[in-house]
Image (cartoon, rainbow, N blue to C red):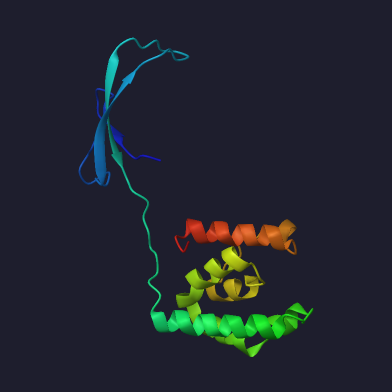
Length: 156
């Protein structure tokens, strides 16, 4: 959503110190009719648009390679396990959790691309749980909640 300030005349304008100035342009709009106003003239609009901020975490190649190796080992060794407890207590999964916040973008990308039970790791690394209680246990909705969280926090 664009952020701008209106001056006393009602025309949007940039106020130094109050609104970050990232990018601006003038747009001309021919008016239609509004509920309370009828516009028949051209209005100059000056918007200050703030680009999407990214706090994208740069993941070192060594970390990414270690994560991929551990994730591959974990997936291959827990493929036949039905117990979630056994899956999350697997040494490779625990090593991934031990890598901390540096692997959050990698876990979220893996969850988005291949699915999997990454919820335990995400919850323990972030100390957050975006999954509403009524959706706990529904893997599809849990995945959607975590991916939404990842986008909102600029990890995806």
